[in-house]
Image (cartoon, rainbow, N blue to C red):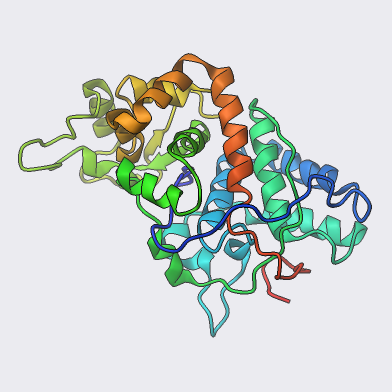
Length: 316
């Protein structure tokens, strides 16, 4: 199953920014909250190097459907198929990390810290633990009461083009710069062949292979993803330093070596090309813009009328 980080947008529905979140939200009610979450993430990473990619992707997928309300964490029931069982989310993993943090938080501060806030903090922590920048996570999100698998069908695929992605970001009050900055999450990513093999063979009537794909990378991917392919785990890292949060992803895209169509199209579109090239040159600039965009993303569609789940998998 693939665990790449998809920086994807729902193309239907609008979520507004600007909910009243506060970086000191738990200072009095649960001052140890962030420490508990950090330890749960750190312990999981020590056992599984895929945790950073998985948790960052989980946060993105949560915020893109119904906003950042932890609806992606809810389990299905006999009467409701939840988001995590929607086709694009079947490859999500590492829910146990959020469960572990929640269990400890319920012992220390019962019914206080929302699952949505846990996921937002965990997304920051995996970036930091992978060598990336840090930022203050404003809290006060509430957990949503609705989670529907059919809504995940609105998530575009890795073959989405830049125009589609810009449109989706704009519907959430996010800019083209946010799109490019958040795409940098792919620095921690890996993808199975199914997400990019359409670029390798029978691409179009005029081209067997996607002409925007660097010939060297195309040959490498064809070797890793033969037809037929008996290896279900075959795939490709999305940059050459996949366990380190850095700007190598942008250097690869700038060199024609983006794995997904959605990655490489950022270089081909005049609205985003200059940002890709700037981030490829300047890692510090990328880090600054990434943190700013993560803060804005974390405020998309925030539910202030929801609840604080006692179990992140179950609506109270």
